[in-house]
Image (tube, one colour):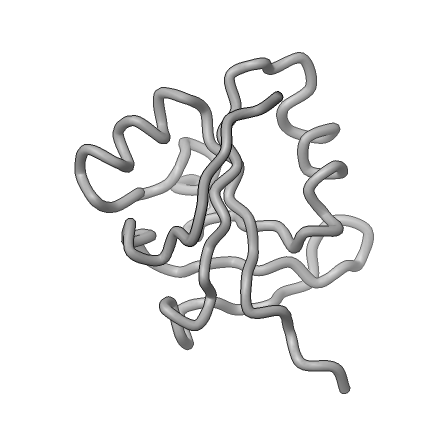
Length: 104
C-alpha cells in the first residue's frame, strides 16, 4: 500500500484566506462546517474539486497544507467517485500552511 502524500490543498476564497491569516486558524467554509470536517484535496484532485464546487470563481487561493503538522486529525475517506480524500477534523492552524498562491 502506498503511503498517503504529506501535503494536501485547501481551496479558499480570498476573503476566507484573509480571515485565516488574521486569526491564525481556519474553522472551515459553510460546506465544511455543515459536513463536520474541513475538505482538503490531494494535488491530483484539485481540478475536479474546482469543477464541482468553484466553477466560475475567480477569487480563489490555493493553500498547500502540511499534513504532518495535522497528524491524526486528518482522515483519508471515500468521497466523490469512490476516491479517497483528505478530511481534517478540527480547525486548520496557519502553521500547517506551507505555501499559498492566488488563482491565476
